[in-house]
Image (tube, rainbow, N blue to C red):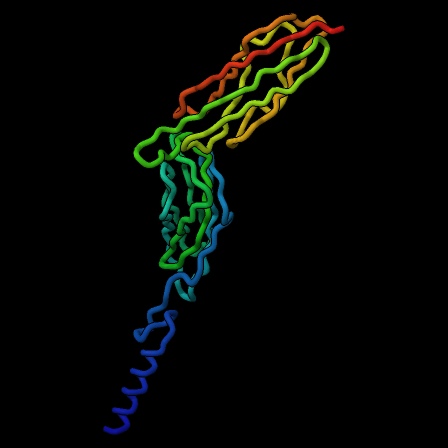
Length: 236
């Protein structure tokens, strides 16, 4: 009787301190670890990206495994993946809707039979999260007057100021004098001045003209414009 009691106590103690891998009833965990490749994903609105998932099975577990993703950015969905019986590799597919919001390094969780892995997702979206009070995304533009001589170049400073907007905007010049062209980076990614080079041909139209700077952004943003005076002087 005493020996039986000691045996039961020893079994109880063993169960209390058993690791999660094996329980008192001999039941084993199915998957010990899961890894994702890549661990950082960039996807544009309207695109899909696959993420390879690899699991490490516990000894004796051979069944098919379902893969799930949670914590996804707004506008992004994930198909539940699966890993076939006796296999170790599978995938999930991330899909960003056409109006998906932008997100940077948002951490999502991949789960397979209790084992988890983390993946950071960046979305280049066309929709922009609105600010407090429902403020709409907007961009303002300003440009400084400039003077240029025939067969010469000059610089024009253009500035954009954004409100609740992170996506790039494109700058375009309208109404330049005949023989004058604009050169430089027409895509702006932040609130800052950008310098555009204006080049006048040797026979460029002389005189003062009002030039319009148009700024085009995502569909969620109303296009805006500003005007500046450009004076072309005759070459001496």
